[in-house]
Image (cartoon, rainbow, N blue to C red):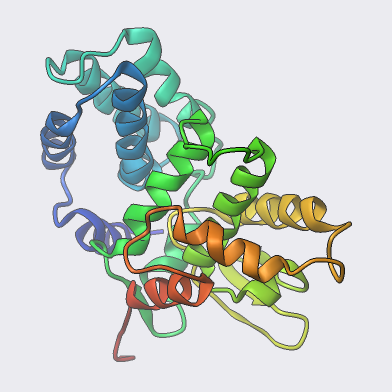
Length: 262
């Protein structure tokens, strides 16, 4: 990882690269917090997830820690966020553990330039992944009348996998696997293995979602029309212009900009 690669990703996602500018932008974003304590906490978590690339991508342990502290201190000082220090620390908790190699050192590297693709930082898919992931982690999603929590969470995980990988519903339910080797992410649908790009999430998270989805539906495959149920559920997730997983795949593709190989 070098500074050029880090700056390319930061420019794509945030349009700025320096620590002071990133923290200032984060602080400005916090002014959008409103509603109940739970809603403001969810909003903060969405921002922390989005800025996690700025905090730890390409950084060693100490630098990542310093960035995390700067962002967390900014949140604690925010007069508009109005959350307790305990809640703010909880929102940053998933960044507590850093290893000698940055937690996001390999995944976003693929996202800057992989298979002649680059991430478009302001695309809908990234915003929706961040929003849905926050709902899932904090359990702040809405349930339809009579809907079970495990069904709702599975629908959200299906949407997150589709938005993050562009995978079709059939592949999500059956054969898709993701793996990372020497900093390169691969998708394998059981027929063809190819380099891929994962938006926002990481390989381990996608693997856990795939396992959970298939386990949830293991006793229903071949007995009920799973695709119709998921299509109806996707419509209720309030993702712009999305009535099925094909629409989610389209949002994923819109996030990738073709780049001209040098």
